[in-house]
Image (cartoon, rainbow, N blue to C red; front, side, top):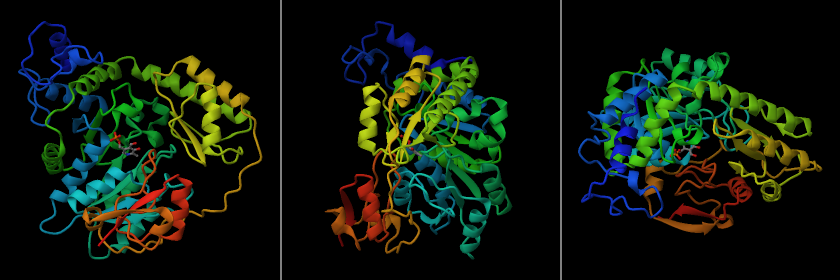
Length: 453
Ligand SMILES: Cc1ncc(COP(=O)(O)O)c(C=O)c1O
């Protein structure tokens, strides 16, 4: 597979042209990557109005992911989420769009809904076990659609995989959407690699586009060897083409006019890799992850069932809090993706080597199990919130910042998150409860922006 952006940037970076164009570093070394950090010069094409090397590269990505259309983002899935929601909102004539969303959304979704003035009704699971996971069934989606009554929702929005590695039942949820003629949108920020898994995984753990989603975003940078910021916005063959056109408009509206060519060439170079050795390397990595999970479980830790590249260990049941466990891991030179007081989350990729996996196993071998920590402070009960303002009204209202304890009874302004995982404890516009305050403390959130009307 050709890599036209990478080739162009490499050639220009290795030439000795005098640069009288942006960026101001002129290709001279400051951090080491300046040579290849260019702007939209002649021949470099224009992101979101492409007819040259970017168009060719996006078409390559589209053929690799078997989509009707794939756009690049150099500003992460966050940008792709804004465009995806904007595309759906565009088709409302004078009324606000309505989206049914599983509650564990990333804050990018909330800000996009605020910017686009989208109404959201939440779909809740039967049991909440953690802020990050919201395992909804076909029946939950059917109920949420029927609860909308006369007002037909424009789309169902799910996060799959979630931060803890749970994969949604995309085939079943997509069947409900199809039956009701509603779009299925997926935040697949954590699952770009899923498309390239060995066939045995494809039916349940495949990529959302393979399994029936109409539109989805992937953060290439999270699970593929792509620089931070690199992401895709994919459209399935089943998605009406008007949404592709609308999304292109939205990408232009929300994007910087100075996209990073370091990121674009990284996405482009990755196409070459995905087309060749990636599948084989991924199959090997999946085996390494399975082996390390088995080892960790053999030491007595509870290892959750997850998507193939995540290792999620229940540290509370092993007797540890986040701070103590992170310290133990650091002693073994391990940096996890996230560690809260419930779980330690490790994200692997094809670029982890044997030594990395050995270290991880060794770390767990040396960490003694302790008495499980009893945590009766929070029964997850995110569903009973009084909503006083729309997301847009709350996000754009004047705010004041209060310590968590003083925010009880006030209306949440900015989505209150700990990052990672950036899943809001309270949604903008909802009244903050005592239980929310407890949960915020658990996530080490000390202050909240509340609406100050
Ligand atoms: C579930 C989920 N969605 C969206 C995002 C935003 O992705 P990006 O950082 O690529 O903008 C994240 C980031 O962590 C995420 O975890």
